[in-house]
Length: 445
Image (cartoon, rainbow, N blue to C red; front, side, top):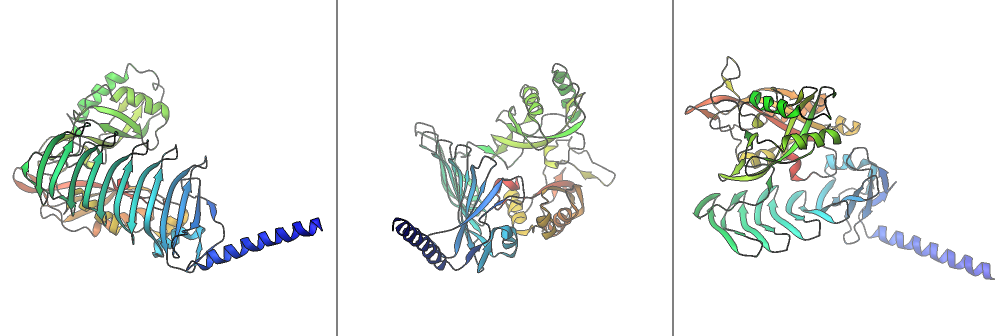
């Protein structure tokens, strides 16, 4: 009798679980089939999971976890088919049957939220960034990746540090800046991006896309001579093999390197030596926004060899190079840097939005897990036309072809100006291909 009772209770529990699963499934317009957790195929995370959204019949959540099984991201999607299989998530994204719709959370190592992105039908509407202690750091309202609406920033103590409103990426209305005690420091009135009264009000932050990027303070050859002298006192890498290393530099308002962060193909020893070497030197002019020096981020490739850590003369990222004014690159008078550089319609934000809308991940590359950053070089001629398109640094045939296709679709630019006249200017744009479920806007930097 005792065993029969246990059997009866077990049967009731199993039946209840089955009925709950059936009822839960019935509340949704689709069924999750197959594995709900699988190994991830990219270096973004170790595994990913899927679960129903209990608050909506046609939404689900996909989460990524690292090798320590700590959550990396959690994202809400609208799903349009009848059956969802996690292994085909990338295919659903390509066919647009899986659409960002709701919150995307990214997490720090301690499990706290680092950033929250709010999407509506695939368009980014709001971005909230947090301090490690969980306090809000910034809030940016947007519409299809253009800043639209409130833009606010807070000090670590929770008091407001910056506030204003944007319209189509342009400042409109009153902007204010406060110190950590809440005292008003600056106030400016803007109309369609132009300051009409008061003082320029610029965010106190590290800019990934400043109006004018940090530039070398002198010729590359002179900087390399200084680097060689400094490197002579460092013994750790004297026997290193020649290799290219990509470094992420944080440059302050005075042009000094505050920090060297890890880039691709960079081990801890190279990073340590790079910090020791570059932080002792002032080789940059600071980036500016509204003619105000700002902290900025600069990604550069260096050549590491027993001779030292040097800047390659063929550094492919055009905007990082500050050559002498008027110096042409070849007999066709194609310039590397001029007094007024070419500008994409809408500036850097316009270029970033164009890439976000136009790039289509090749199916072949998706299936094979191929990803990377393609550098496309082209020439903006005197009429603003995009000409002489070529791959400066490729990844894979399919990605390279897609990058060229995208550049071919670009509209006319504002041409570069030298000595008061339009001239041909060489330009290089990096186009990122990543297989993460979502990309934050910094991925286009």
